[in-house]
Structures are given as structure tokens and as C-alpha cells.
Image (cartoon, rainbow, N blue to C red; front, top):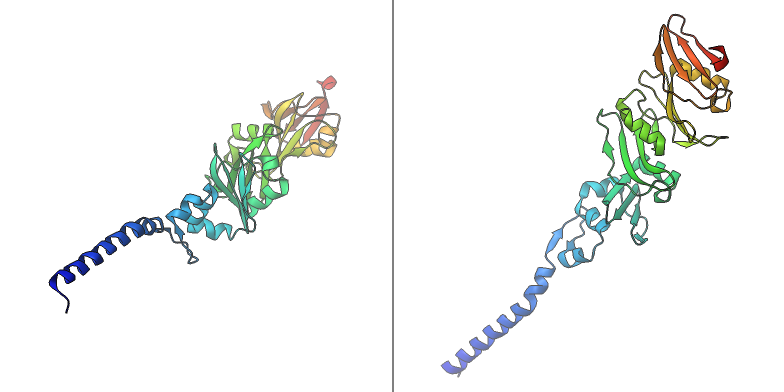
Length: 279
């Protein structure tokens, strides 16, 4: 027969064991509390979260981002200051100064085509909608070789990159809401002379270009004047690079170049190239 003293001792022993068990297991339970529950049914615990990189932490905490990027196709790459990971439909990058940003879809395809961070630097924004609602864009940190960069996409132009002095000129003149509108080509070196250029839609759809050279700086050429310059051979013609933007003259417009100028007659709609000796 169990005495009262034995019963009390048994209860106290059981209570002590339970208390000891709680003391040992409670921290482990807290460490395993769920902090994120991704749509795919997996879970990330607090303990696991502390082990995640900034890229993985953002990826697993944002269901919409996971939907847009798709699953990872490679392990995260750590280059010291820069870390990145490729996904089925884009990239994520992290640096201590820029934080974590993504690029996806057609813009990510262009980013890959031009050489990713080796050429354009890391993204400093996520993909965003343009203020006019027509397009999408990412800004990039750039490199010493090209300066800052961006990639803009519309359904009419596809994804096109701009960088350096061309991007600076475009930005100074209103980006896509200015007279140049959206880029239709990616900024590239001019074929035979030192310089870079991009072509644009132009505000009225008639086409525009921005050309830069170390001797002339960056200038735009538009519309019918641009068509005449193109027919003569662009910067390889006797006109050379533009030295002014298009400006008003009595009865029309004019653009100046290294070797001459082109005027446009508003009455006839005709553009005519002139050598400086003909002024």
C-alpha cells in the first residue's frame, strides 16, 4: 500500500521532472517558432532565419517576389562586397551600401545580355513602373568604365539600356517624359570614332538620337534633320558629331555639327546640309 508520504514524494518528483523538462525544451521551442510560411508549404524558423543571407531572407519573406522570380537555379555567389543569386526569371543582388534588389523578366534578360554586374553594376532599385504607366525600369550602380546605367522596357521598344553621358543627357531632359521619349537601342560605342550613342522614339514618334564624343559632349538630333544626317552617314560623314541640340531659327530649325550644320524649312519640310563656308 502506498503511504501518504510516498504519494507526496511521487507528486513532487513528477513536478520537478516536468519543470526541468520545460526549462530545457522551452528555448528550443522558441527557437523553432515559425517566422515565415512560404506558399510552397515550407517553413523558415527563427533559428533558420538567423542563418539566412539578406537575399534569401527577402526572397522567403515575399510571396509575390517568389512568384515573379521563380525558383533559384544556382546557389548564392559571394564576391566579397557583392553577393547575388540567379533565379528562373531574374536576379537578386545585395551589397552593404545598396541593400537587396531584384531585376526580372525582359529587363533581367537585357541585364544578362550586356554582362550583368560586370558591365552595369548591381541594381539599386527593384523593377519599377514608369510615371507615365507605359514602361518598366531598373536603375543600376554602374561601373567606373561606363558610369551609372538603367534599363527601360516598353512593349513597343523592348528592353534597352542607357548609360554614361547618354543617360545623363536623357535624364537632364526629362527621361521618358521629355522630348526624347523611350530609348529604342541600347547605348553603344560609335563604330569608327570615339563616342557613344542611343536612338530614341522622339516625343512625336519621328525619331531622335543622343550622340556623345570627348570633343563635343552630348547632344541630340531629331526628326527630319536627323534623317538628313543619317543619309549622309551619321558621325562618319563630313558633318561629324553634333555640337548643338536642335534650335529655332527664322522659318525653321537648325542643328550644328563639327563640319557644318543642317537646317529644316518649316514651309517645305525639307532639311538641307551646309558646310560652314556656305554661311
